[in-house]
Length: 351
Image 1 (cartoon, rainbow, N blue to C red):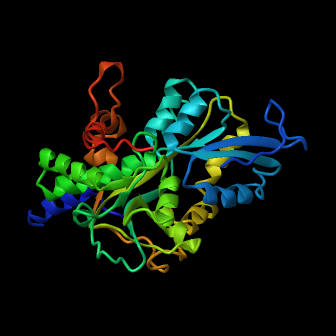
Image 2 (cartoon, rainbow, N blue to C red; image 1 turned 180 degrees about the vertical axis):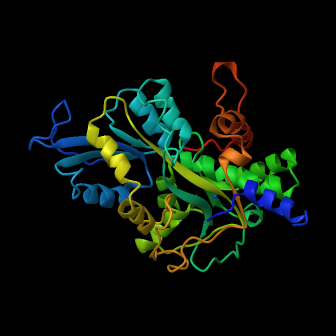
Image 3 (cartoon, helix red, strand yellow; image 1 turned 90 degrees about the vertical axis):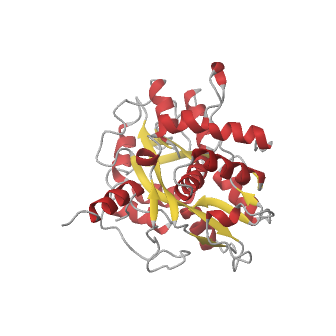
């Protein structure tokens, strides 16, 4: 079990006292397929596409999934959420950020109780990692090394990508921790980070594609993305920093969705589905699901425990507070968030 930074601090304090793409099928307007089954519209952020290819196929082999087909759409998390808000068909959504689900709650498209269950609507976990060229030629060991002059960073754009926001909060969390809670010093770290950014693509998947095509020295990414790339014979290395952030990816069924959509969401918490997420590099959210993971640094022990694991809830006040403080876009006369401000200051506005 992973110890979050909040838990670690409590433990430390206690120790002083004696004594965690699109595919389609033929459908009618009511979600029925031409063959008389049911078609579900699955809309998700970019990175879990390969996992869902396996999971949806496996679900179709279960009694609950018999006759169910899927029409799928993948892309940057924020763009996908806004598309559903704007009318794109969706029975099941899986985004990178809680805010992309709550946008649909506010629009009346997802129930307010979407995160009321045991797992709070989270179907898979990951952590932020630093990806390097094979053999780590620059000798990158952690967050401080990537802001050295001349190191070229690739990370997705916080304006469109949920993955980017996890990345930036992980980097900021490190800087805050390293500087004794000094927010000005942490802000300066972000200035150095963006000054070193040579590409800010629209999604985590686009950032990986950019990096594997030869752009940059390091890529800030999800652990599962790095593992998947290695499974697909991409030549890269990655490291889990001593201080990193727990990535929690939320999912929900939309209002008025086919009943099979809820069955599919329930299926995602089975050992079979969680094992599929694990095989694709995600950290399971249920207890007892283990196994070797091809492409991990140590396939037999694929998910090392960071020294400090930040969470958005414990270390950044939850997503509403974090979004306002770091990522507010200045609309309606509101002040820019810290990250948006730094992007403007450095001229690194991304794609």
